[in-house]
Length: 257
View 1 (cartoon, rainbow, N blue to C red):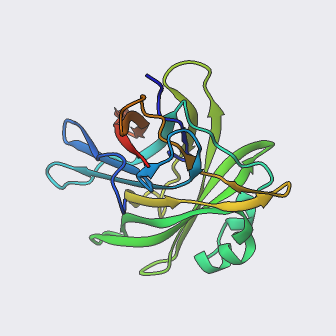
View 2 (view 1 turned 135 degrees about the vertical axis):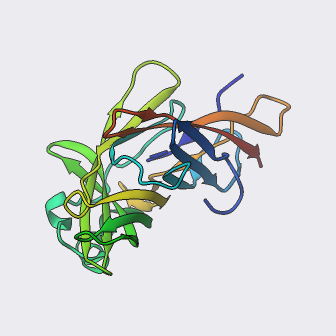
């Protein structure tokens, strides 16, 4: 049976028709939920078409206490996927540092590949933890001379927070997963806060070398005679400051149209 051919990017982090189901992984008191899907759910059997990738992750504890700080996150996507960025404009971390969402778009809109939001809790002085909800953008960029995706996170109130998370892009030559996106998560508000959730919608079409391109596209190469296919969409690893590593894996389906 052929594996469904998926062309995904950060497949990276949940709307419309379901193409995967949320996975919850727990170790002791720590719990991570990871959801993801591709839209549309119904795809041609062999011809890839543009898709949007929806990702949603949350971090918490069973008893509601503060979880350990997230230090690293990585996501490996199905090997059958293709990831296309050639000819797309790039932005740099320096361009995005200390910028609001509006300023980041003004500087780097042509490199935009995704948008969404984040949740965090921040403590000021000895006061209580305060929930923070901000905006997130994803840009095509570089780390040195290597390609990367740059996650820009911004919140204006009750305190201004801006940070950029560069996701390095690497390729694997063996196993079920191919492209891997990985990043070190910066400390929030001088170590007084922690991330509790991240939601992203990744989608971009553009013209390169006279042809219309899509950073994210997919087909559903189900077995002959079958109206749908089953595949492993992605596997994520969340690494925390206490040494714990939680690794949820997303199963997925696609329908042949």
